[in-house]
Image (tube, rainbow, N blue to C red; front, side):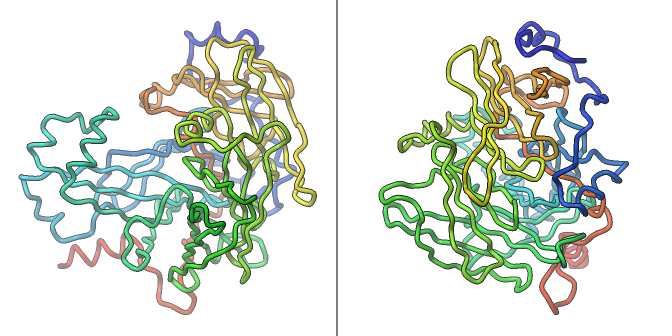
Length: 437
């Protein structure tokens, strides 16, 4: 079913989930050979998933659970209840208190591993009685944080196919080191096959000091390290690293400021130098406030697509101009790839970047419908209602869907651990030991 872009608004009221057709077959020409072969032979799962990044409901299994679905349908996930807190008190609940659970997927590696954080907030039963903890409003969420008796944060690397979870240690006892500006990069021996090591990196800017603190966890050492690096930005300019996922691409991690550009680094290099590339000409904006950047990120997004770095933006006024640019890494220059016009009643939100096809774009319309747009043919080829996935529109912003490729080797590979050490502790290992206590 192909719908012209200019007829889009008339079809919103009839939003239905459409099954994938021949129109959605994705070219794999620019992907690395090993990943291209892996994706094309993964028959039981879609080649990639559009993961809804938030989950409030724990499951009662020993691993993470993902309801994998082909885009534009969303993939939902849940985390075992004990992944939120492995302490003894979990087996002896206190009726005076209520536990509130939440988990968020921060980032995906280039070969499908995920970085996530679980949060357990402990409230008094009296406070919790007056709150809608299943779907809290913004004000209720504020009350939860202010009235919390206790907060527990646990971080994991996750295999979305097997459900394996490997817990990351805290950095020097700092529970809240892992924020949204954190990425996950993997390496495979010889550049082929399952990953043999990974790095988790958070970038923290020291305001107005022209420096960044780089927190890096290495699976080879099993430890966190912190280094300070000079900022490659112009004096007085800061990076607004809010809500946009950190990208894994070309052996580097990429931090995105949708008003300015990207910073990248190779965490496996001894130098760990930061490089800066600005957005395309005309897209760079003056320094933005927190509120401005939170609004801007709805209409701008960067991602990895078809083996290249892709940047997408939507104009402010109707008819809305949607433009996509691809980056030439050697020159650091952007080239306009596509530009289409969309005559919609509301300004569309930019959804996840298709990792396999730079001609396809996902848009969030009216917070209720996700559409797949063929930018080359100027057509809508599929659409899906977020309500059909069980997602409430008020929890459906542009950046809540994370693209994740699903190579077939994920189904038979383990998350790598420390070199020369015994098998790395997984959640299942911890649960087995706790059951014997």
